[in-house]
Length: 292
Image 1: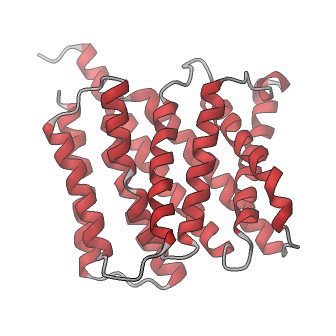
Image 2: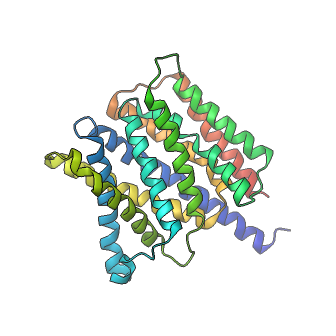
Image 3: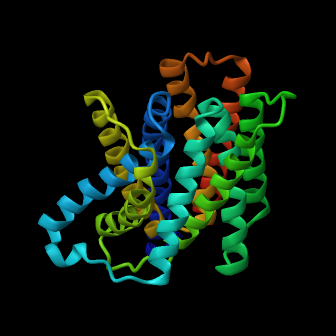
């Protein structure tokens, strides 16, 4: 007979899974907007806009909802490291997708679940089952099939793409250390504030006049990213990182759709097969973990 504790745990697992899937679908829109903007704007300007409006929108809400004191973060090593990791992850991702297709960039980004799982295994002592390891491997295989990597001249974008995935794994890992009593929106504001401050220091070196539509798209990228990170934090409040990791692969589905609609990257049978493997791998590991 299933106890109330087991039922509650299963519900938490499912809530965490739903939250991370929603988050990665939303963040794809921010990434697509950033890639589109990078066609006309310097990369540092795009990066600044993403973090500045992330911090501005969440800061206004936090100020009204929780009062001015909540805008003053209790500076700590974890906060600064977490903010720096996200800033580096996003910066390297933008540098990557500026040079290569969005879906190809995310293929490299998806080293993140492997790195995150290893960090949780070694530092948080989370138990990683054979099924979970297999699901992560199948998910990555699905990404490879979807993108069909071919021999091509070496491009530095492949290095920055892998780097972005590593730093994003560090960011997610550090998210586990957020105090439970801190409202998610406040944590999201503090994280964005670190990135906004860092970007503001260097953006003057490449600043240029922006058109109205470019301002609007920068606001969109920052606002959407902030919403996505609220869902990310909520997912970590509900379940372990090892459960969440395979589901981050589902971002490739929305990225493929946006790549086709915005940039004309046409999907083919291999993309469909690959996306199918990604989704199935996430479902399998989630059902296995929830049933434990």
